[in-house]
Image (tube, rainbow, N blue to C red):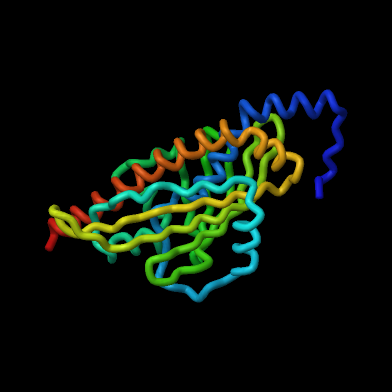
Length: 223
């Protein structure tokens, strides 16, 4: 259902052209609800499974990232999974202009990106051994409002190579727009949006990896 979105044919075409140029930003941003990604909490029972599955099955955009190796132990990784807000506090990897995370209790977090006019909220809704699932909702205002829901799934397994043990982490993101019309625009512009989204996720993943590895290195140094 389109929410009171009445446009002439000419206006619609203008929005389509603008969205191809602009939508990558708000969409990618919604992904942040994500990318606080590489990390989630201590096994709460599955919650809202039906809603999560509906978003995955009917997503506007789905991106599955290649696994990355994080040189850490399981304990450190899961600490950040459960305390996502700590990502923005450790090591200065995330600047306040880029990302502000607020702990709202009960594994719920606020997210704000001042430079991008983006706000949102997400929560850890499922945490089983080696899998964490976050559910979020956010919006960005750039000429007109984009809003939608996101499911971020984080899978992690302990691996071993010649340099020792590490955690292999893979994230998948499913995004569904609240506005059906803008969802159609996003699908039409997916070749552009997918590249922008992948770039943002990769950047956030790299910063998250650094925070976790630095925290693990400090922990080892104090033993």
